[in-house]
Length: 154
Image (cartoon, rainbow, N blue to C red):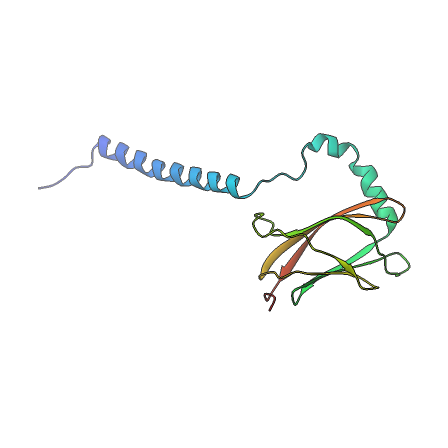
């Protein structure tokens, strides 16, 4: 007995394929929204009003950052234009994954005379350090620093 491919068969195949595609897309979109808040600032328009002035003030400090995440320790060395170590006030710091907040931690920085250090027992992979510092003259300094760990802390 020979079967023929009718219009209803083609329609059923078409609907079935697109149903699978739409179901997968909706599942992925739902997971993406639930695992990453995506909120960087509450009101981007308000934040943009002072962006250029804030950036100019930060650049005016002339700070250079050297950040490392090795052997279970986070190191943040800041130098000024003359190469002298800078000890800023830490307003807020968060070390976490870029994609979710489950492993976020607040580093407890200690000044060792040349840099800020904090224990950071992290797994290998990509991490992000969000910093909010304050200079001695009160100038706010904000940075998002991507970091990579090749081997986890022992």
